[in-house]
Image (tube, rainbow, N blue to C red; front, side, top):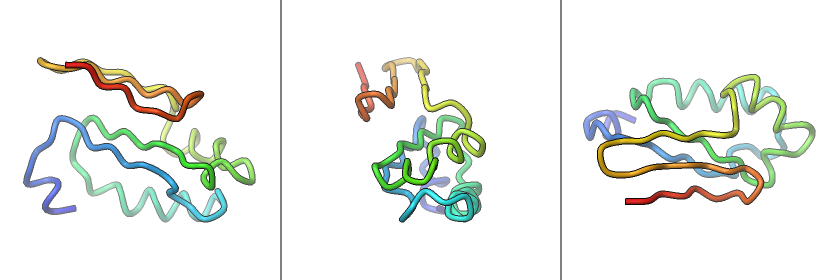
Length: 90
């Protein structure tokens, strides 16, 4: 985490699987691990295990919308959970 923060990135993308079974306590643990990341554009992408046992609902409670889009000086980033991909254009 310290190395990530030292780089001061425009975006950090964390890809799933993030949990084993999509349980709330797994998401709480994940949030504690990721909270020290200081990047304002933190994109957390679900994997198939993360949606198990209504995990997608826990994800929304903790991380907010699964739809993310932002622009920087040189690129646009969009994440669509329906196709489970991150799109970046320069």
